[in-house]
Amino acid sequence: MSLIDKLMLEQEALIPVYRHKWRNIALSTERIDQEKAAKAVKVAYGIFDFEESKIIFCDSPYAAFNKIFLDKID
Image (cartoon, rainbow, N blue to C red; front, side, top):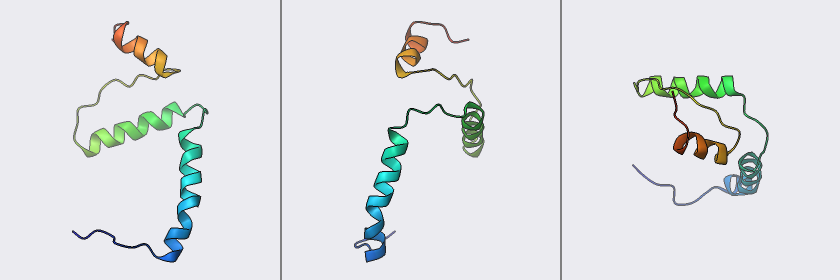
């Protein structure tokens, strides 16, 4: 397997574009489409031949922490 040693000028010029795109995605506070996300997780589990597990959505990292460590997950 070989690694890329140098980017072409066109590729290098696209770095700020992609950085901006993914920064906006990472900092987004929009709610996810839970149905679409659950479907993607199920597809990934199928690809890796993992047993499907229950998918739990939480409103925030704090709510997820509480769900995991303070509540019982059925």
